[in-house]
Length: 154
Ligand code: RBF
Image (tube, rainbow, N blue to C red; front, side, top):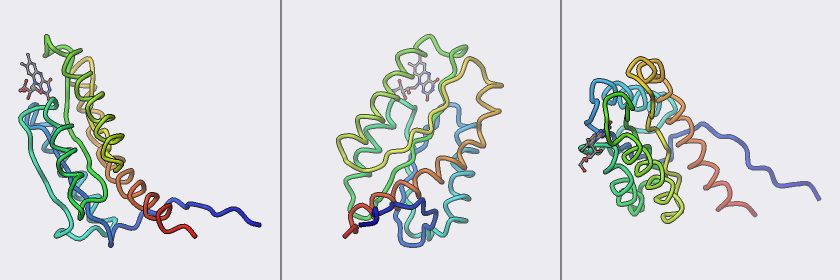
């Protein structure tokens, strides 16, 4: 007997991906959204297989992701937001609500919900992490393919 291996697969041609991005701190989240979309495209995800939704803030991401994940044509959802400690009295609450909510949306929906919320002490830290959005797209495609491989394993 040889083990059945699930390989990392970064091919997006057959996948449906949703991206939900908060408008709060939009000068950063807009760039993150653009980077993620560009990366999804370079991984072969067809434009018509991508859904983009916007929310007011990071607090609304998890509920929106959950609703998107209910769609049969969505294999994974990427959540994008920025919560900065220095700007926000409610930092702890918003950051925790977003983090816990996104984790729970993944657990409850059974689909990959990618955590792309930057929680930083200041704006400079957040700006330096904007390009992480490339990794969110990679992770969405990898996870969607992993789940397909698990489903199709014989
Ligand atoms: N949303 C974010 O995405 N990032 C933030 O840093 C942020 N800070 C907030 C600070 C306060 C005091 C409030 C009331 C809201 C903030 N929001 C933030 C918006 C929040 O995620 C949500 O959209 C609104 O509270 C409406 O439910």
